[in-house]
Every structure is written in structure tokens, then in C-alpha cells.
Length: 116
Image (cartoon, rainbow, N blue to C red; front, top):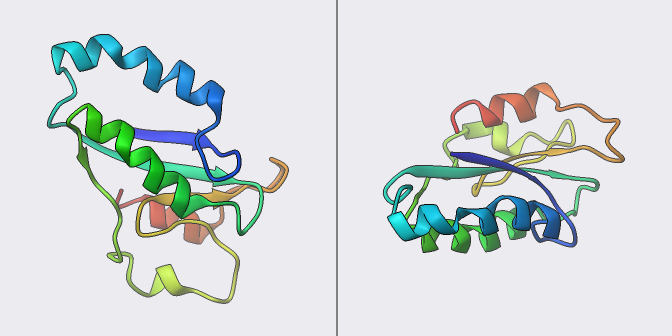
């Protein structure tokens, strides 16, 4: 499972949390997703929008379900540290800077998401 979520002040937006995580009660009860791999792909409006913090705090939701967190880590190599363009993503998960929603994912961001 890869969860794509918009952010609000370095946290999963309430509507996303309610519609996704809070609807998983039956799956938790039956341990349906226990042992399944999971990760995050986040989208922020600004470069300092909290991509790492959001993925880090959302991990707790998946851990409560017994899911196995599959982060990117620093496996992306030099692409993780490219300084010639602005890009999203962190060791905790792929990400994109969407601005006001009109900015599309860059080639670097898409490449970062691929191994995840």
C-alpha cells in the first residue's frame, strides 16, 4: 500500500485521515493488513511544507495496523541530493512540491517515487 496524501501544517489533512485511516477499523480488527508493506508519497505547496514530518508522523498509523514500513531511505543515490532543481521527497517517502496545484511532478520526483 502506498498512501498519497495532501498535507496541512506537516500533518495528514483531517479529511484524508478520516476517509482513509479511520475507515480501516475492520481491517485492524481482523488484522487484514498486518505484515503488508506500506509507504507514503506526499504533496506539499511549499518547499518547507513538512514532507518528512508528515511521513514520520503518519508512520504511527501504519504501525498500529502491523504494517511493514517501506521507506526509500537513501537508496536513490545522488538523485536525492540534486541541487540544480527544487524537488520533493525524503528518506521517509517520495514527494512532490505542487505549489497551488498547478505544478506537476518533476522528472527527479517521478524517478524518486519509482523504487518505492
